[in-house]
Image (cartoon, rainbow over all chains, first blue to last red; front, side):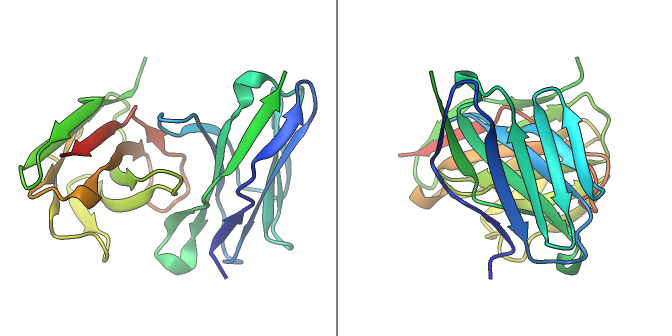
Length: 112
Length: 114
């Protein structure tokens, strides 16, 4: 089992819709969860981070964490073409010397 | 604005010719990281510094070295670049090396090896 798994996509949604991106992780002791957006040829940009179970909202973005089921999600409301990018999930792994483990990312395409 | 700056944005080097990539930060963060990212892959951690303490990843080739002369600057030296070292190199900073704090990335350096 991979340590951090994401559906590679591409996930295609129409403009204005809600995009839902999911990430599962293997280390039950993980405490920190990060979502980064990466445009093609650019560096990752922090979108959200979450530490506690439940939802965390920031503008059009909501991060949802469920530690019991070991998944973290990112919802993007009112999706815009400018949201088209790869979204990387990163999770700290206490059992792996506290390293940050990255998923391969989900490619999102928002169609006008 | 506080930021992480990488130079150059694009670097072309010849096979076997040493190359140095630089990173500076105005965030005053304790931790600086170097990642390698190839197309459609996740960033791969090469090493990191917590202040002056250097932490090398077990699978980082000896060909890659790093220096951190002060809090603000960090360098990545590739002693003998091979074609397989062509990638985006990402510098990042954070306040903690325990994976609890977000990473702040620079714009990256795209390395081409000819």
